[in-house]
Length: 408
Image (cartoon, rainbow, N blue to C red):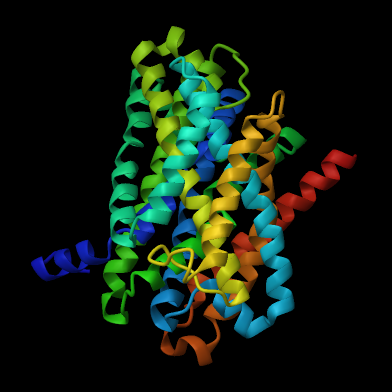
């Protein structure tokens, strides 16, 4: 795509779905996973972000292309091509996983504000009301602008990383030199990192957003740049989160359970500002994702069942969509307010479930994207198919390896 005034204007017209979807990927559960990865394994998992970024670009580009070419959402296409029963079971599994993800977002929101002395019994109801009001009372254009602004706040993690003063030579070496470990803890972390970086819900939300924005085939090159930019942005942020925690927590053998622990632990090691920036980033990411995840779930469940969906609807024109969105937010918020609820287990388990579910979603996507009756000349190239099928195979192998190593 050449750099011209026309192309820049076209990019600005379609920008949003790709950048927003990818950045929500760095949600509370994702930040917790990256933080624990850095604290537990130092820089040894940084190399994984390179192949993950390539795979993420390929996967996200496929669903965006399907949305542009067919004008239909991923859940719509799965229902039409594979039947209502298959779609129903897939939706149920994803609904359960995303409820855990939503709980994780409110857990991150509560934990980040507790660092600043705000009780979760105040912050969670207020946060839940804000994200509910934004989507239920807002329009797609307004919601998208707010989401795009939220993406810029992820820069706090990059600043925190530099304040931690890591050994950049060692960091760069670890980034390009793969290391392997067959221990259950390492395999679990690898699945968690992949599962939180390439999450199943992202594919449904991105295609739905592309369709709702009504992006046309002639705008697709600009749409693809939006997708690629978003994928690179999210993994750059993930890189700096791992580096910040590796430089401080791993080097001092400090164990953490979540991103809030990381924010607190950074203060004596990297300074008050690094800790505050990390906490602000967590608060933003958590509330941002607490809006998107229930929204994505409401989209694909309603689309899979053939019900009306979309931010521009209301309770009268799309009751199932609005009530499902409302129900997920209320349930997720209420769970956080239960005393002694195992938040860490819920957060990390939700990321692992994402990793386990991913191959199934990718298989449906690959069968659809290679269907010439649907896609015509826009079917996958051999290179795209090779990368996507390799991603499926790797996730299956990693999941099986985790099961075997845990049993043995």
